[in-house]
Length: 318
Ligand SMILES: [Zn+2]
Image (cartoon, rainbow, N blue to C red; front, top):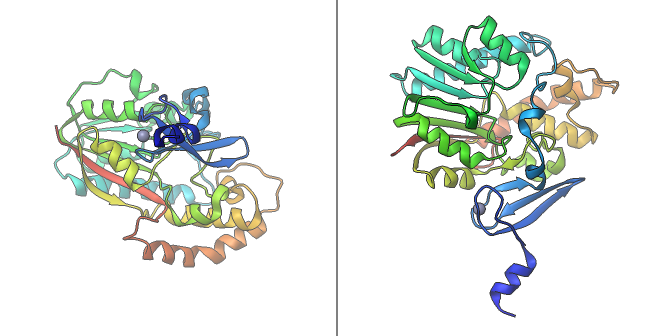
């Protein structure tokens, strides 16, 4: 038997995932979910991506009424992180004035950019109805409740496009990259953040890894596959990080606690105000015990590719 026919026999031949490459292989099966990896570019995709309509899934994603999303004073911390995010964008390009934030949450980053960093155009997209109403009616932002691919925005007009913890949710991420490129000015920046599939807790917590979230996530990236996707569309990679002050420690601790207790993100649900009949005390104690050591481990991994959170900053090199 020839090499080629052996390949064709042992791997699924599929031309309908994002990269349009020919061969993929099933790498994990978690219950009814199956993850496949493209053997050419390394992008990992959930086998169910063809049958879902992500936009209908997120209409009530935030669950409870804004403006308060989190309990126990965590709301204040979240706002402080949004201010910090606005400041980080300022440090990347202090002259930027126009930004599109895809999946703009409740809009605080855009608000802070407008208020404290002299932005004159702050546009967001938000398909979740509570967050959309809040951003539009309370914060008075320019927000669209449409998918990016259905939006008509002026081309070559933005200094920044940010898409943070969104790309893993969308059905056609490559079309997003193409559209983002068309909206950016030359030398404008795209900032992408996704869970890092090469993270240290994903490797040993497996299906208990918080970043997996198979109910919602359709794609998974590591440094190589995300940078490769951007480079194939004419972006120049400026910066790659796998440590996030906001996400890393929480993701690692929640994954480890879920793995120890064989439960599904009880603490995360608790701080979002979701009622649970489970006894939450052991989860709170484990969180208290693990937070500092896990923070230190993530800090040690700062210069590695094994942190929890993959952040890529790239410029439009057209
Ligand atoms: Zn591929």
